[in-house]
Length: 302
Ligand code: GLU
Image 1: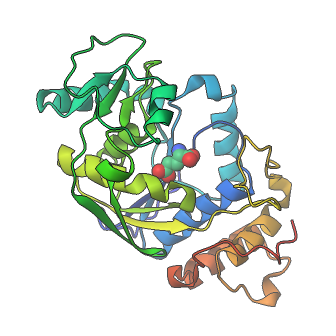
Image 2: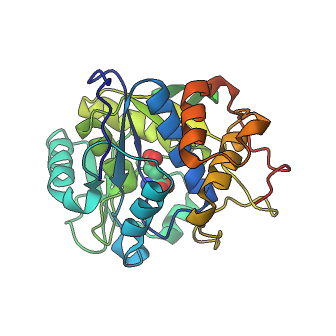
């Protein structure tokens, strides 16, 4: 069920929330959903949801639907249809063919052990071999030595030389699945995404994505990386670490806590307000400049 805003100027702002359905939303992913939603709505923008279901073995059955149900319950209503990456394989194949024609990708047979021995930065040793494509090879993109610069709306300037710090990176895995880096870039371009608001844990991936956008001739959206919530041991809250799935019956309380986490300052009288009142306040008062660079969680009560 989609909600559409008649006041949106098409093309001016298109944002998205792009969860991987490896489990239900937890408080950390709710924060990312809320931040991208508020930024889009405060800018009279379109807000899309894209299901990044690229890795079936890691996706419990029903998780994608569960996430969509949670978003609906939290009244984070998206525009248009949900895009499923599992339906987009032809587009990723086409992108790979284009790169192959430009000789910008190659098959690599190196093992994890080889890559550990290289110090985790791939040194390009398979570039000039011609391994046939099979289940023992991954496809890597040829990087170059130019630094990639991001002007992140929250984190400021981030600069990375992809070749020196990451090396030629994988765009299709040995198991045949398309890599996140490739799919995210193809789909951000396909959906006309102009603004990306997402968790800080993905900031390291952004230079690789900028690089792919450049070589594929796609525009680069603006980026804002919000702090990522960590647990008492300082680890990122993730589904893999069994972060409690959010209980949508506590929806209003969760939205209120998420607003605070994002550095917004909801007034006391919003305590006990409905989800829709909280979201309305959040959109009217959204200030991306108030989002802290790093997580500050001591006041969190849930
Ligand atoms: N699917 C990715 C994740 O859930 C996020 C992708 C993105 O926002 O670029 O971690």
